[in-house]
Image 1 (cartoon, helix red, strand yellow):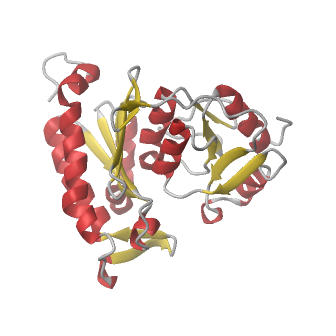
Image 2 (cartoon, one colour):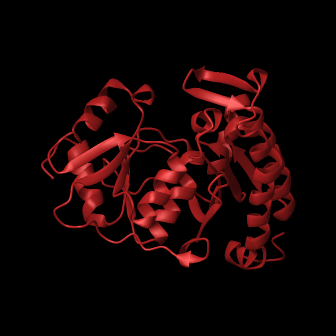
Image 3 (cartoon, helix red, strand yellow):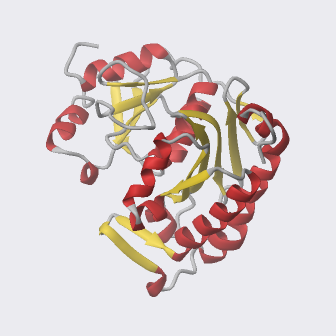
Length: 282
């Protein structure tokens, strides 16, 4: 718990390993036993056939909600599945209390299809600022962490995104068309231009990790749900990258962003992607 006037940074110095342990336990107990073993009755649709939820999502989120609130009494949890059941609970992101932002299975479609490209995302934020994040890909046994001002790490090794290699097409992961408005589709189509190699994204959390590792150059996403972005934008920032909306401002987890937005390996790449998304000459 945060004791007396302890700051979030002080809390993290004492409890970051316990958060990591909770994330790993949620995956070991609730997610991995169901991977490639899901029965039909354990998979449901939410808004449509590309928006799935499974028993693993629900049970892992409940596990994390209990564990994280116990670690930090007075904190609240904004989880994807809880918000689906009660949309007003999303407002806690804008409140005074420290908030855990949780996506229990990011990349549920991949999880359902038996693909390894899914992860569990946890971020700790307050007043709209993300202070720490955990990105755990249990099928790959990879854990990426970031603490604001202290760097980004993958399995203990420091991450540095670095600038893209000169002369090579920019590799940009983009939103699935099913999750875009007509205007956003037109903006994303502007990335189909010489010098850019767009492709449909998989798990948002793993796409952010790819940018932080320098394996991908940027993202171009058209939705704001904080559980998909909070962990990743801090990971990219702490690896030396940045994020921008079409208004030229950093992405805000509290919402109201000019979409689509990008997270990129460096500022120059972010500006280039935003210029294209805005219909300008990069």
